[in-house]
Length: 241
Image (cartoon, rainbow, N blue to C red):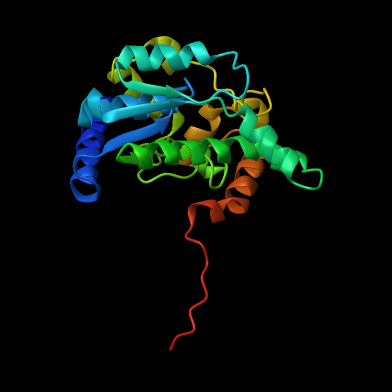
């Protein structure tokens, strides 16, 4: 029942309107991982703004095994791009902190440095930063706060993984990018390995409330409740003068 072409066209118009109201003439700047989300987000921005107003930032941390997918995307779209290797920044910060970081701190350090890099490029190139998270990942908190979860506007955050892939096909993106197995780029596992369930199961549950495995349902529900704070505004004290 999902009309990918209709939603794609509506999203393109939404992006145009965002820039009219929040940065007329500005550029869309985003990190390019070579996965479906950054590929679809970049392609939507190209259709909305033209390729001359979209800038990709490739950010390997040392050697990146799948960086060819990132180059495939920027070449396919014909967009300007920069390559910034963040390894020295990551190692420099780890060495500067006077204690041993927890494993999760180390895992989240790279996406936070990547987002700082994207904002540096955006501020130097009259840009607005594209958030590339999708509904499925946001639902279970599969993002890094102030890392990939940051941005100035978000074209995909109300679309599930299956819907994002359908829009990627409607945009004419190479199948290798749309169907690329998502790897977190942090610890070398696939997204589904980390989550403990498939995106197909998650997407069906989000859209219909239906799920076959009760254990999987419990995992999804727990992750959703635990990570709601990532999608909310920061709590702030109001003295009520």
